[in-house]
Image (cartoon, rainbow, N blue to C red; front, side):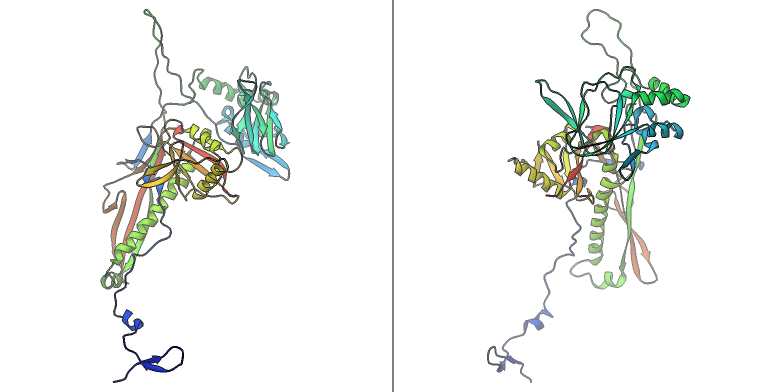
Length: 470
């Protein structure tokens, strides 16, 4: 029998070992271990706060009242050096030119736009002056200013890249005066198209003249603030007057949302599934992590998908800009004003939330917190502010902040899914066995079905150009 020895510390001598070495002992011991960990798992607050609507037929139709607002988009530009020009086809974003497709006339109108570069503090138009032009903002930020009630100036929001102001001055018979002036917050460039130049080109074009006549005839004289035809009512009357007759018209072609899908094929070798399932089931762990990845992709699509994602489906009138750069309390108040009818939640990138916290600290403001599912989360005006890392950060260090009103009864934002599908593993997520191939590899098809719908435009607001740097 051989006795194991090891050197004694200090003098280099050796002596017999009296107990089993720990290295050898580990070979016989069962380690305490964790399930496989995954850094990409996030809180996925958007999936938690959305109410989910069952879409049995795979398609969800959103019926709305007929509205008469068209072309309220944003205009795009091209530049050559310091020369900035509006893309002629982009003039179709102006309400009066929506649907007009005569390229020659649009080229003339684009050529009639005059460029003006401005510096911070410059006044582009003066409140109360005659409204005789449309202002197209190519770059920079402009504040809408108006006279206050007590001889002071009031701020009515910010216009920025792609916005326009004063389109009514081109087509109204009596455009009147500017309700608000425009004052530059930053340096930038605007293009202006005067009413006289527009009328001169229209006089030479029968196509444009006919288009403008059809535009005026199609838009009812009495509309509410949302562009819907006013419902004729009578109130406060006495006796037996003749009551007005009315009806409520609907959109003839309402929008439909088809459920989208995220899928993958999970592969596990039969030898792994047969022999290495203690103490943890390898197939279950592989499936668990795959499902987590699918749910992460689902939330990413709900935010970023160009067809139904929230960032691309917010009404352009529901987008506001920061007054400066970082998100201030004033900016979040402006955002909540876009969804003022019972806002449910604010979503922002964690770094945007940190930037908002710095702005609050600089002003000596300490936001409240609310409890959601046992978590204390920050809140602004009682609305929880939740992190969502799926909201992108641009290369220039800017992001967006979303405010949502949720729920079908509240005419808000709702998630769409389909439960009860074959081989359902989680709600609207299925795992289907696909067989074993000649290499003894088991395959499972993992599918998640989902979409999101904004029932009315004012259920979603976006604060854009949020700077997140210090």
